Length: 209
Image 1 (spheres, one colour):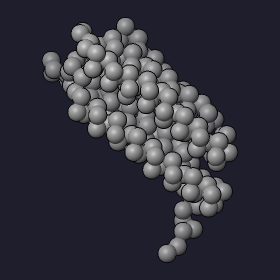
Image 2 (image 1 turned 120 degrees about the vertical axis):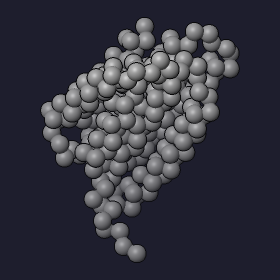
Image 3 (image 1 turned 90 degrees about the vertical axis):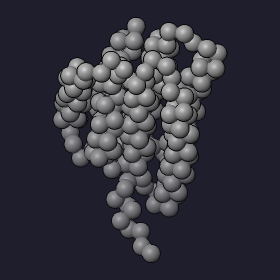
Image 4 (image 1 turned 60 degrees about the vertical axis):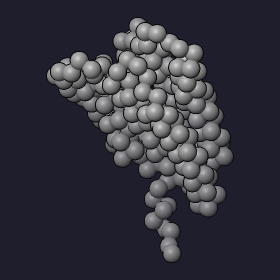
C-alpha cells in the first residue's frame, strides 16, 4: 500500500509541472497532505494514540486544511487566477520532473543502508529538488510559497526514510517551521499585493531605501 501512495505522490509532482492555475496548486497541496498521511499510516506497524493524533494534526489538519485555507485566502485577496508565464516551457518542466524522479530512484537503489527506507528517500529527494526548481522557474511570489511547501513535504518524507518509527522532534520542528513560514510569507504577499497590485518578484526591483 505504501508504494501506491509513493506512486501517487510522484504523479502529483508531474501535475505541478502541468498546472497553470493557482487554484490547482492549492488542491495539489491538499492531495499531497492526504498522501503523506497515507504513507505514514501504512508504514507504521504499531500506532499509539499520541502518534495517530500527531500524524493527523501534521498531515490532515495542517497540510490538507489549515495551510490550503490560508493560501486560498491569500489567493482571493490578491485576485490570483493564473500564474505568470514560467521562464521554462511546461514540456521541459515535465521532462525535468521525470528525470528527477528517475535519477532519485536510481540513487536510492544504490544506497546500501538497512536503516534507510529507500522508497521514501527516492520520492523525498525528488520532491526537494523539484521544489527548488519550481521556485527558480516562477517569478510569482505565490508560486514561491508553493515551491517552499513542496520542499517541506519532501523534508517530511525524508524524516520517514530514517526509520519506521516517527521521529517526533524532527516532524515537530517541520510543523512549526511550515506554519510560521506560511504566516510570514502570506503577510508578505498581502503587503506586496496592496502596495504594487502585482505579485511578480520583478516589482521588488523598484523598492528603494
